[in-house]
Image (cartoon, rainbow, N blue to C red; front, side):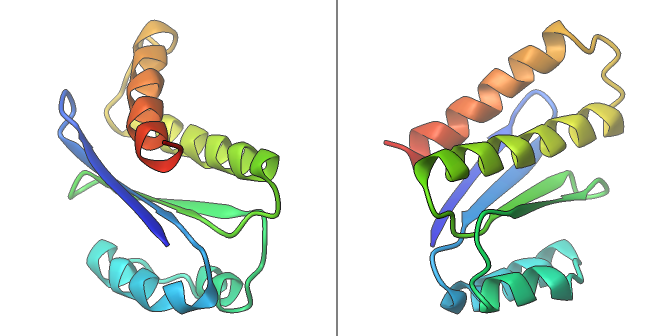
Length: 124
């Protein structure tokens, strides 16, 4: 399992990205679900049955937390596709929650920052 945690300082949000390697990672995910107050049996099922090429994005607006889960991916291209798909959900939800009205430039800068935080930890 690969775990990336970072903050988005300008909005004071904490983000956790979990990249699942095996079904044994379900125990760590269960702990995170408790921390985030998430109940998602389907996600745990997907991890425990080693379903490939998918992910989930969760938000806790009250505590300003975001969680991205990436299930095992069969190829590097699948990984990039799933990660970017889930990252887009994260960006959209943060933008909605904090009422970003300038959807173009502000969101592009936010996306760049989040991408940098994820990719420097996951891909290097």
